[in-house]
Length: 81
Length: 258
Image (cartoon, rainbow over all chains, first blue to last red; front, side, top):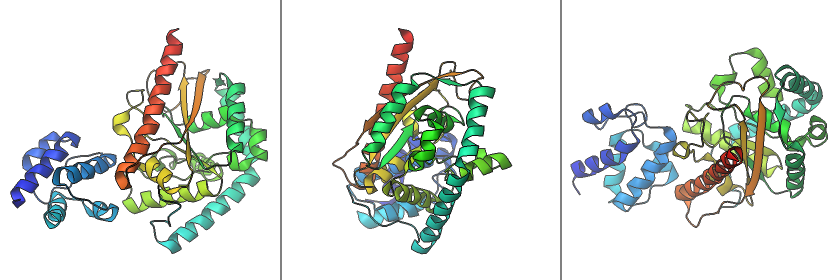
């Protein structure tokens, strides 16, 4: 799977959880999931589980805690698929 | 579910935090009776709060704590003093004095309580573990590990699973935090005491209930379980607690309607 495809799927998964919908128009690898998209921190778990389902991978608690930006998520997923 | 795994946080830091908790508990016990009398006076006499069906609730609570299994109290959340009202409803202060372990710990949000000195005083001596909701994952892990330690030690802890006062004044499943699930996962044989608290005139969230408010309290114990593991298990457990609270809320409105 191409990096762009992974990136788009991640953004698609985060979209429904983002309070700041406008920020979804300018997503980069440096976009911070909590700060830029204003995702409630409790919903990060839902995002991680949705990523696991989408890409058919397992993400450990330790790996999940390191995900702050879209780039972090993309790199982690790229290495697992 | 995992049986009593070690804390996730730095062990040395955790040990020093546990010493702090033990000291807090010791000092809290010494000052408990005069403090409890003042708080009860303020709530009962000055604010004229009343709680319905206390006899039934207190009997149920006394029976529950006799079972001696770790008990995590989860409640809906509408005002800043919900935990005080719950304390008041579940037992007499004299009973807490004799059964200090069953005077439960609470996890108030730091931003609401640390500005005024008397709140800080009450927090320290009233068995509270302040949580910075916007704090780091390490801070949240430390709070969860402290709660797990206390539950294993026979104490009862309160958590508001919505992570804050419900802005809709109804149980907000969308805002469920999964910390409860992580606690129940890691504390062997942990049960959850679901408590539904609501003032008759409480139609929106607020800092304090209206003077003269009459409170309804209902409680039910559940032992949430899930065949999943890890984060999915934590989510399943937390949602089971929230759906139970929602069911209790529906029951409250049904009673009100009739």
